[in-house]
Amino acid sequence: MTDTVNIISPIDASTYASRKLASGEEIASATVRARAAQRDWRNVPVADRVRIVGRMVDELLAMNDDIVPELAWQMGRPIRFGGEKRGVEERSRHMLTIAAEALAPMQRPDKAGFTRSIIREPLGLVLVVAPWNYPFLTAANSIIPGLVAGNAVLLKHASQTLLAGERFAEAAKRAGLPAGLFQNLVTGHADTEKLIGSGQIDHINFTGSVEGGRRIEIAAAGTFASLGLELGGKDPAYVRADADLDNAAENLADGSFFNSGQSCCGVERIYVHESAYDDFVERFIAHAKTWTLGDPRDPETIVGPMARGNFADHVRQQTAEAVRAGAQRHLNGSHAKDVAGSPWLAPEVLTGVNHQMSVMREESFGPVVGIMKVADDTEAITLMNDSPYGLTASIWTADLDQAARIGAEVETGTIFANRCDYLDPALVWTGVKDTGKGGALSEIGYHNLTQPKSFHLKHL
Image 1 (cartoon, rainbow, N blue to C red):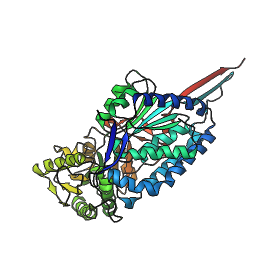
Image 2 (cartoon, helix red, strand yellow):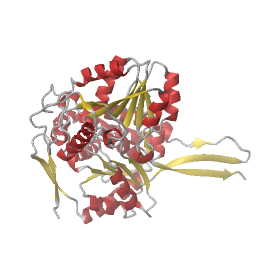
Image 3 (cartoon, helix red, strand yellow):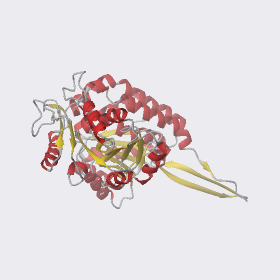
Image 4 (cartoon, one colour):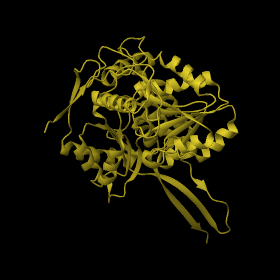
């Protein structure tokens, strides 16, 4: 068994960085130091925790010029997008701003002879298992509020983006967080599962595959640790007859192909009312053609390689299966490196698709999208719900009342109207069905990182 983990760059298959795996003794020591630091940190006033964690956010954002090229090398993100700075700042600042109110004691209405209230206490030790596709955004969702809520946090980052974990750790150190309160661990699957099952972890936040979520649940069984799981997605969009087709086509192309389609809430299937179908497809294809594959280090590149060749092969297989069953390809993108086993995969648009094809029901997590004609709202709702996943769904219409009505019938965590692929930190980020459980961001994110405690005091 190797004691190191390598980051294999999708750009040229080189080893971009190597890191030593933590030993069992090092992992155990990390939990001891975290718990010792948390005992004092939980008693620090919320305003002071906000100030100190705010410095951590400042330090992380200040590293962005170095982070951007690192992301290109680690997972193929084009440098033109500037990394994840804007989203990290928006989410982190919002969670810092609402902390005092979200964590404040809740006084119950007066009852003669009694004082009643509910307070929120930190859970203790939070383990964040972060993914490679948005290595800063997804991790910040739990790290920042987790620390502000009074917890200690251990971060186990995906092997593809290990350097992101080091950036968080460096930001914590520069900001002056107490030693041991935040730690970045380099661990393999077996040691991570052992840590989860040790009884030393109070809450686990995991973003990743459905199978990974099942392994987390199994590892945590019997520990009574709480879980936040954001797993797979197959997010749909429905373009109604009254939609602004130019707006829908432009934004849905972005939602389908940004980050090479490797987005938890990326659009993977589009349903269009039959009266708007031909017009929409024409406009969508025109926008999709601008999403061309290139070297992520080039400032002009808009689509980079996928993170790994096997991820791209999965999308190739779904596309080939759909074409064999009668689907039509519209881009037929070509690139010298777009071959089996390569992470270089050009975007594709498919029509003539149906729900017997895996590309319309099973997660793709890559730059392919199917567009399907529907007769009415009822058929669109049925097809949107014909999936084991439920993270987001978008409805494109001039009638927001109809969007709300349709959204109430769609099995998903978030309903968008006339936009997609975005996390508003004032709203809870959650999913249903195989997409997972729990929720991040908003005041509910703080509630999931704390334990309620009731005070029922009788006057004498």
